[in-house]
Each structure stands twice: as structure tokens, then as C-alpha cells.
Image (tube, rainbow, N blue to C red; front, side):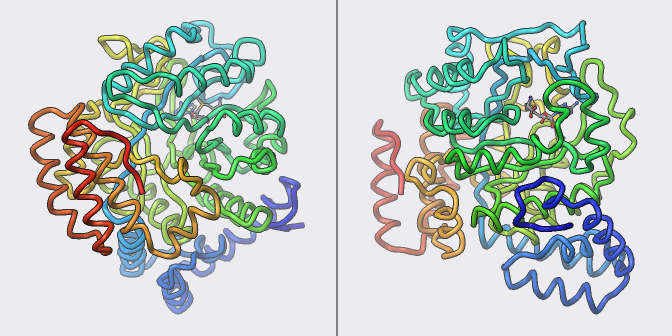
Amino acid sequence: MYNAASLKAEEFICHEEIEATLAYADAHKHDRELIGSIIEKAAGYKGLSHREASVLLACEEPDLNEKVCQLAEQIKKDFYGNRIVMFAPLYLSNYCVNGCLYCPYHAKNKHIARKKLTQEEVRDEVIALQDMGHKRLAIEAGEDPVNNPIEYILDCIKTIYSIHHKNGDIRRVNVNIAATTVENYRKLKEAGIGTYILFQETYHKESYEHLHPTGPKHNYAYHTEAMDRAMEGGIDDVGLGVLFGLELYRYEFAGLLMHAEHLEAVHGVGPHTISVPRVKHADDIDPEAFDNSISDEIFEKIIACIRVAVPYTGMIISTRESEEVRAKALRLGISQISGGSRTSVGGYTEEERPHDTEQFDVSDQRTLDEVVRWLMEGGFIPSFCTACYREGRTGDRFMQLCKSRQILNCCHPNALMTLQEYLEDYASPETKAIGEKLIAAELSNIPNEKVRSITIDHLAAIKEGSRDFRF
Ligand code: SAM
């Protein structure tokens, strides 16, 4: 029986409810009146239910689909402005005991080089990331209780936060590791992590069990209920995602929104972020083996529909996607992107991009400086801000900031100040010139006069060598 507030995976992600939702969406894909009323509801910026959003995703009326995209763009602009938060993944270890069929780290893959960073190597990687200009990381590891126990992850977090190289500083560490216990989530919280990210991979239980034939990840309920344990352990910000290509995208979309509704129903706050990875080629992995791959057009539609359905949830896209796809996705709703990423263990300290321990092929291979410049040329403000989390604006407090539309007096100046830091410390002369102009022009978009004047003072101080101002 479907129950969004249940703590049982099979009740809050109820297969029958998803099937009924998909049938309902299919039956109404040409129902202009219903679709029009859903778009109208979404235009109130209060979000949509999984059923309503599923109708929009199924909609086959071109002009109405266009309206959904326009609304997604508008919501993106109104809530997130033109800021794009930058981050990089840091792969700690590719030892893994699971058997995930789509992942090159699966235990049976004997030809991938296994590697786990020592604390000294973590240090080198972090310095390399700081030297690029990164302030926010997402750490990644395979699941292996012997090689990567929670103590190892905690040690790495400690090391990362302890390194201050030149003006470099990692100010927020998000964590993407396998589902774990409440006790371990509590330890991660105490270690000062930002978001706990865990991709569901697929919400379809039967497929999930088939795709994860061996290892602890085989347990669908344990994996699906992980976010509840994370929140019980005190982590306010959790990040959802599915790996598109494994199952039917409409099924995943409904499941993803049901998961968000569940978190809201039980914990009073929805997911902080939603990621939209697609299966990529990797060592031992041929994406063609999964027959549910989606076109770029469908991918963009999914992003637009998520944007209108959960307007307060940040959306993340990685370098799995090409520059071209990322450009469109940014307009439709993405608020965070990675740049200059290496998906191999120890990859940042290598001169050449190494492939032997890579988790997936990177489509966007540009440097961070190139991505930053490209964003600015497209009218976006790359932001290295980590203020919310450090000011305790997590969970529902962050949502309040969004809902009260104070973002322009808070996130906007923070974005400009952290961009100024980047320009001073890491940018190429060309990027710096573009950035200086952008910052000067964007100052006028800070509505509060006092905030604007403080920001101007801080920007001047940054040029003089001061760092780390925030509202
Ligand atoms: N091992 C952790 C777990 O079990 O959740 C998470 C870390 S894993 C390094 C990060 C994510 O990469 C996975 O959750 C999966 O969705 C994604 N991934 C795995 N193989 C992939 C592939 N071939 N292409 C794209 N993404 C992939």
C-alpha cells in the first residue's frame, strides 16, 4: 500500500502507485485541459506531485512541452538567478565488494587497477584541486568494509579540511559513499560533511536486484531507506539521483519524486539536491548493454520537469555530459556543475588524464578555468560559495532562504565575492578580464543597498589579499 510517510521502502516507493501513475500519465498525455491546469499550478512555484509531474513528462503536445521548458527556465532564474555552483569529485578508493553491473568498480572486474589513496596522496590531490580553484568537493568511494571502512572516510575528510595551501581551502566536503548505518551517518555529520549523496540507481525493485546481484548493495530496502537513516543521524542535506539508462525513465522519474515527497512527509524537508547521471562507457562497461538509454531531448525534458516539480531542490550535472548538453541543461534548471573533473583514483596529480582507474569516461574534458570562462560568456556567474552550510543554513533553513527570496541579498553577493577570489588566485588573464566586467555589472543586481555597499568593500579587500567573506 502506498504511503509517503511510511519508513518502509516498498510503501513509500510503491510499485503499484508508480504503475498507476504511469498509466494515468499515458492516458492524459494529450489532455490539454489537464496539462494546462498542471502548468498553471506549477507556475505558482509550489511544486507538483509525482502524478502531476508525470503527466507533464508524458505530455505529447509540443506547444505545452515548450511552456513547461519556459516555466522551468523562469523558475531557475527566479530561485537560483544566474549563479552556478562549482564542485569537483574526489575519488578516494575504487576497492569495492559489490557486483553492480553498470559500474567498472564491480568486484569481478579483474583488469581495473585497484587503488586507494593514502592520507599523503589525499593531501596531494587536495592541493592539486585547490590549485585549480575548487572550494567544494564530493568524495567518492566504492563499498568495501575492509579497505574503505568508515574510519578511512573520516580520516580523509579530516585531512581534506586540514589543508590550506596558498589561499586554497576546501570549505565543503559532500560525501557519496554507499548506504550505511545511523551511527556512521552520525560520524559523518560530526566530521562536518555538507550533503550526503546517494544515487538510488533505479527505483524498480526487481531491476535493482538484478543490477546489483551480489554484495551489500543488493539489499533494495537498505539502500532505499538510507536517506532516512542519514537524517536520523543528523544529516540535514541529502542528495538524490537515479542512473538514467538502467530502467524506464518515466518509472525512475516518478520514483524520484515519490522519494522527495517521502522525505518531506517524514522529515519536513525535501532533498537538498537531485543529480541526473546517465550511464556512460567505462572499463568493462558498455552502455549499450542497458537498453533504456535516453536521448538528449528526453534528458532535457526530465530536467525541466524536475525543475518545475521541486523548485527548491538544487540540481547537479556532472562531466558525464558534454559541453553542448550541459549548456541546455543549465538553462532548464541545473544549479551545480563539476569542472575539470578526474574520475580516477589519484587522477588530479597526474599530468595526463589517467584511464586505468576511471569510474566512467568524462565527456566534458575542459579545465576548470575553461568551464568558468564558458559559464561567464554564457551570462552565468560561477560561484564557489559554501556559506549556507557554514552558517548553519541547511535543511529547512536553506529552504526558507529560497522561499523568502532572500537569495539575491545573500547568495548573489556571496557568489560574486567567491568568484573574485577565484579570479585573483587562479584565473587565466582572459578569464579574469571577463570576470571583472561581470562582477561590476552584477553588483547592481543586489537589491539591498547596505548589502551592496558591504559587498563592494569586501571585493576591494579581496583584491588586497583578504579572503573568505560571506553573508
Ligand atoms: N559506491 C557508492 C554507492 O554504492 O553508492 C557511490 C560512489 S559511486 C563512485 C558514484 C555513482 O557513480 C554511482 O552511484 C553510480 O550511479 C555512478 N556510476 C557507476 N557506474 C557508472 C557508469 N558506468 N556511468 C555513469 N555513472 C556511473
